[in-house]
Length: 505
Ligand code: GLU
Image (cartoon, rainbow, N blue to C red; front, top):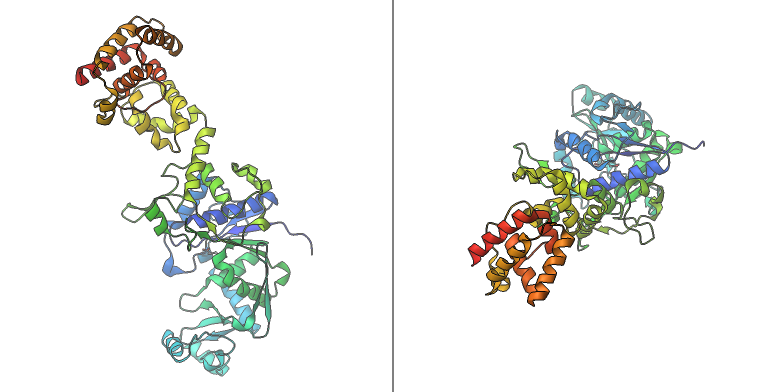
């Protein structure tokens, strides 16, 4: 068989916001496609009309756009294997359902929900399968003319796959190796429902993977139980030669490792479980997103890439492009990956460090302006130069740095108690005199002159600096004192000191 071009797909069901685990699945598909020079397809699996949520598709597209994960074809991206929305492929599926019926690989079943419920009551662990199908109302147990009559009369029915006992089903999984399952235990899953004339997930998924020439199916572990059925469907259609290889990715676990990560864990522990904010119909945010919480897309990518895979070295920081050649699907772990969200914060901090002060300033400027600050952009950059390495998120800057732009209006009580000594007012008044005499108000020059004065007066440097900081900042935080005074300039520095002396006495 000729080597086929690698083609993978990300195929979400638009039932709500995309879970962060889905983002990781898409990322691994992306990396796999890129490293093999293949294609990544974006397919929308919307055959379950009861769970369809209209805004979900646009949300998913926006999320990947933000993250920089690019698709080669699919919904909103074009391509020649479309349409890529399953709801637009109804006629295609009908043809394939007919093929399975004609070949005896599937059959029609009329059992109503009530009849099925009754059977479940009668028989413990009932499932519709090779042992029980003979007791049910289907085209295997009923005469053909009766079946035809019921259909002609408009009776609703489903089409089920006919899985015969005694077969060993082999799932070739790139992470888990060869997974073998006995066909005896599988049930005759519904493939199609006459009621809405739509296939179920299983049939649509396989038909589309085949028609879209998918070579590798990389998806979450929750789909592993469906894989034997999918293998059997490929066989039922006679498509064994183009059966994709599978990779079922490890689950994302709660931070403590006990159970599957859920939205509730995020709410409880205060971290997002979705890439973007999700809003309800009234426009209220019901789930917070990584973007709105101030994460950089590069940090989210880097964090997710290492949840379930690692390069086998100490290196932790990777760009998306750097990950492409390194990623190895066969080295993904089988065991679930703990969602260590604090590591995500650490990654964001690392990306703050990587970015220039100017880049950070550009991100921060709108907030600074919203506080009515008119300082030049260069001054905002200067503050970022001094302070950015202390933060993990840009939103931490304003509470940390507002004093550069706004004089304190109050003085922190605790700091006053500790740092404002009996002689502080007098020492600060003297210092004002010293500062007034400095023409070159550069950091270095101030430092030299002020230190000389402190030495000459035999003051304690720490006491002077602490009191001075209180006058300029209003509390005990901030970078070096001369960084602050040089930034504020002579007039503003002295004005703030005078005000503090007045207030604190
Ligand atoms: N529509 C399925 C989902 O929502 C796709 C599963 C698969 O990739 O086969 O995850």
